[in-house]
Every structure is written in structure tokens, then in C-alpha cells.
Length: 308
Image 1: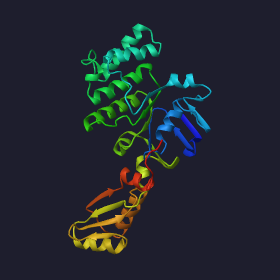
Image 2: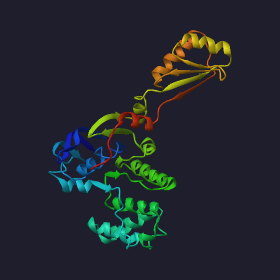
Image 3: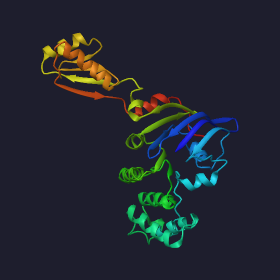
Image 4: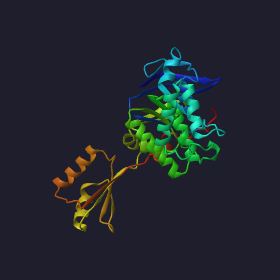
């Protein structure tokens, strides 16, 4: 649904995007991570036709955002960092205005608004002005407004910033439902747990360059510190395993060994095979891998604060 090759963008002397490549498959969540100023919002603005790139090839839903902006806009929805809700209008009126902007027939617009109000649990508040809504309700209304045009691709630029944990999880559930319905989601976020929970693929952007890309599990294996913890039934088995696995750190009180490992299936299979061939029985095994916080900090160490 999204193909990007060699994307470049500068503002004056500052290079914001320095030749990035991205591919986003249909019906998936793709998360773009990076520190402030890395170029995440600029990427979203280019893909959604709001900013022109300086170079590179871009296709969104099969269309060039520069040559065919109307075709791209017909296929996408954008929810930015700041809510587009009109506080002086009711929730229902906000949706009706979006229906008008999408040139929906009045009957279809009213039906679609009622459907989205119900889906986002806003029916009871539909007649109240948006200024009376909580932050979580305003964000749900903002998402509902974006969906009035039935976009095939949804750009979410830090959609849960400022929300409490309960409201954030509510937005996550909505995103999962949208993807289950076939919508493709391009997500930028600074909440690493959010990317881990939602995204099938993650790219890390730093100083305008992609420094890593892959599944959450693959990215976690890029950072040292992963290990397998083996627990044994007795000290004899522990001692035998320690002699075999010379790089392991023993914990005699817990009858356990900490074995450096990336946690992959191949590594686990090899480890257990070695123990089995030596006749050493393992009572319990657990895998410990770095989380996305570790990945993010390792890959973006030394980044400057956002200036764009």
C-alpha cells in the first residue's frame, strides 16, 4: 500500500530525510519510531500530500502524491498529533461536517456518522459539544472523523499522546479492529509499548536515516543482553551444565544458569541438543530478551532534540 524509495527532504541547510526506503503491506500496522526531530512527522506529511519531497520515489495506494494528490487523498485518512475536533460543535455535528467535506450524500453521511458514533462508544455524548469531552473521547471522535471517508490507509501521527493508560488502550483496540477490517495503518509513536503491541513491522528513524527495520522480535535481538535462564533439579545437574556451557553464569542458590542467547528458535534448539547429548536434564527454561526501550536507546543514542 505504501512504497518509498530514496526519500529525501531538507529544510534550508537541515537534512530531515536522507534517502529512506519503506514498504508497507496491505492490512498491517507499520510503526515508525524515532526521537524528536528524526523526521517522523515530515515523512507522514509527504506521504499524505501535505509536503513535497525533494527527491525519491513515493507510491501511496499505487499513486504518486505529487502527480496524483487527489487520488492519494481519496484513499487515505490522517489523524495528527493535535485533535482536529471543533470544540464548539457536537460530536455528531463534527462528523456531519466531515461527511460534507467528503461530498457524501446527506442520507449516507447521517448513516455513517451514526455507525461511527456507535462503534466508538460516543452515541450517548453525540449531542454534547466536544469541549465537554474527555481527552480520550476527543481522540476517539477525531479518529471517527478521519474514518468518515472510509480510507484504505490511515496515518496516525502519535495518536495517543497525552492520553491516560486506559484511554490509550482503548485507542489500541480501535486500531486492531480497523486492521481486522482490512485498513492499513501507518503509525508514528514515541510510546515503544504501543509499537510493540500493535505493529507487525517497525522502522527506527534517526537523523533522517533508517537505522533498523523488522519485526519487534527481530529488533529486540539486535541489542546485546538477551539470555536463556535454565533451572535444574539439583546441584549435580547444575555443575554438569556449567562445565558444558562455559560462557554461562551460574546462580547456585537458585540452581540456575544464565546463558547468553538471542532467544531464537535455532539457538534454543542447539542449546537443548547439547544438554541432551550430555545427559543433563533441564527442569525449567525461560527466555529473556531486551525490550524495545533497549533497542530504541541503543540505536538512537546521542540524538538531538526535535527542531523540525
